[in-house]
Length: 181
Ligand SMILES: CC(C)(COP(=O)(O)OP(=O)(O)OC[C@H]1O[C@@H](n2cnc3c(N)ncnc32)[C@H](O)[C@@H]1OP(=O)(O)O)[C@@H](O)C(=O)NCCC(=O)NCCS
Image (tube, rainbow, N blue to C red; front, side, top):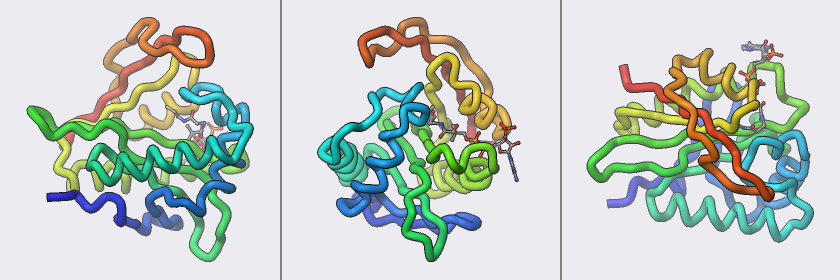
């Protein structure tokens, strides 16, 4: 039976979360076109709208197959896309875990936006999806992401050396984890 992630919208605090959809392309292009937003991500800054559509197709397939969900983040009454958040790699076979991922446009960094949203997303994972473990993979050097996770009860579990390869080089990744209470 499907988890219904493809149609699962949430109101969390001052924000509304909705699964990525076709008409998010322009907002996504602006968000991921920023080199500072993409710096530690597995993508180069977007240069074409087609690349935004590819990400939307990825998110749509992910949710349809119960592999995860990527929500857009907006303020109620404001069409501007300010970021995305969600789960990649949901595993229910011989485990109950998911990987959380998130990003914000630069104008909203340093304002506590993700700190307000993340607890609701974690609660969704632990309670609605009955996850035992939520993990995050952080590229070495992404201090803002580490600080966010540490503020929200994640433990640094180790460093995976040269764990990823994108943008023409290998990247060490930090593994953070948090278990259900
Ligand atoms: C990772 C990312 C979402 C973190 O954003 P952030 O704004 O630093 O995170 P928070 O929402 O927790 O906000 C904390 C900041 O807001 C400030 N703040 C203001 N009001 C606050 C409040 N009410 N509550 C908490 N923090 C508040 C904090 O002091 C802190 O600022 P500082 O780091 O300058 O001291 C952001 O840096 C980002 O989008 N990066 C690019 C994408 C990316 O790398 N994603 C992660 C991949 S693993």
